[in-house]
Amino acid sequence: MAKLVSFGGLRPKGKSGGFTFYELDGQTIMRSLPSPNHRNKTHPTALQLLNRQRFREINAFLKPIKKVLNFGFQNDSTHSKKGIHCAFGELVQKGYNFRQNPRIDPAYLKISKGPLLGPEDAQANRVENQIEITWADSSGKGTSFIPDYSMVLLFHPDTGEHHWKEKAGSRASLSVAITLSEKDLNKSWCVYLAFYRKTSSNPYLFSDSKYLGKV
Image 1 (tube, one colour):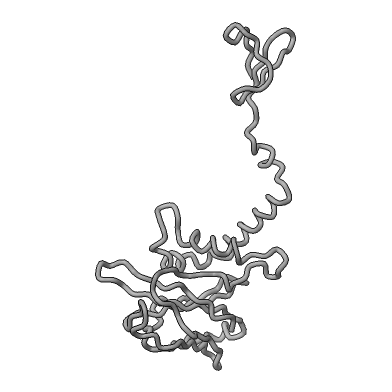
Image 2 (cartoon, rainbow, N blue to C red; image 1 turned 90 degrees about the horizontal axis):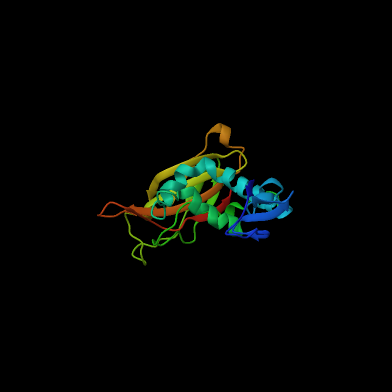
């Protein structure tokens, strides 16, 4: 707050330039106005609280697998935008529903993104102590290439536990089997599959990952 004797020969009143002017005991008082969202910071609306909850829950959902996301989204990442931010967008737009339980739908999680041909007719099945993943032969089709690697993520969203097989096998193998430890047998795992390869100039190329369901 400041007192003004004059303001260019005038005694201003009202609001101007982020300040409010008023008379007090014959003097002109200048006071800065609060920022437009000042009240919302201290007294958030119901909608703001719901959005904060949504952002907080999605961040907590993704945090355990940030290393996986940094790998799969490395071509979309920048100094300030990491893999977790890339995966966040899809979930916040389509994969979160306040009316559902759980509110986050793991089917909308992507663990990689890119121009390579993705898995076709892929399935995941539990066979005794293994999760067997199969897919159709796409060799020589589109952007597929026999030496492409397969990448598998088993994710348990309730606990954040996960098993990431960065180089689970090759595209040409048409299958991969992940053996579960005894402590993991009683859990249902969300399964994700993607392909990738290294180029001659060194960067990686990826396919969009595919969610194969919970097994």
